[in-house]
Amino acid sequence: VALFADGTRTFGRTTTLTVAWPADFKTQTIRIMPLGDSITQGVMGDKAAYRGGYRRKLWEKLTAAHYSVDFVGSTTADSGDMADPQHEGHSGWWISHPDKGIYENILRWSAGILNPHVVLMLIGTNDLGDGNTFKTKIDVLDQLIDRVAVAHPGAIIIVSPLLERSAGAYATIQTYFNPFVRDRVLSHQKKGQKVRFWDIPSYVPLSDMADQ
Image (tube, rainbow, N blue to C red):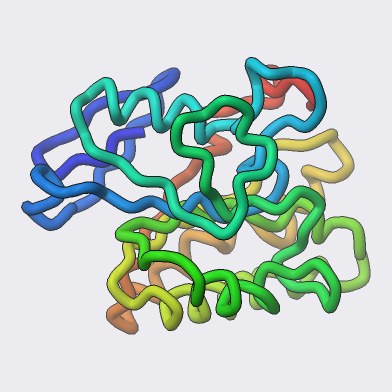
C-alpha cells in the first residue's frame, strides 16, 4: 500500500493506494491506527512469523522507505516481537455489539491515545454471526465512520470492504455489504470528512489467506 504525498509506490503484491498527505508528512512521524478485528490483531498462538497480521509488513515497508511511523492504539495483543506493537485490532469483535462492539468502545479507547494522522478501518466479518441483522450492517459502518471522525477529526480514515470468505458467507457479504462501501465513503467525503476508499479484496484473494 502506498501512503505518500509525492506520487505512488507499491508495497506487498500489487496494491497501490494514493492519498493526498499533508506535505509535512515527509518530515514528521506519521501516527497510524490500525482498526478492526482479528485481521488487524494478527494470528494468536505460536505462529510467531504471522503475529501482527498485516501490521508487521506495513510497518516494515514504511520504515524501509525511510518514513517515521508510529502505530497507535489501546492494545498490543498478538504483536509478537514487533518493534511498534500498538493497534486497535480486537479479535472476534463486531462493528457494533453490546459486549464486543467497536462502535460502542472506540471513543473510550481513543481518549487514551495520541490522535492518529491515519486510521485503517477493516471491520465487519464477525457481524456475519448474526444473519438477522447483517443486512443493516452497512448502515452501522456508516455510524462507526462518523464516530471515528468525531474522535479523530484530523485523521484520514481509510475504509475497506470485507475480505473474501467461504462461498456462502461471501455471497452474503457481496449482497449486503461490499458493493455499498464505496458510496458510503463518498457520502462522508461530501460532508467534508477525510474518508477514503481502499478496495483490499481486489488484491487479496482467498487463496492468499492461511486460515481461509
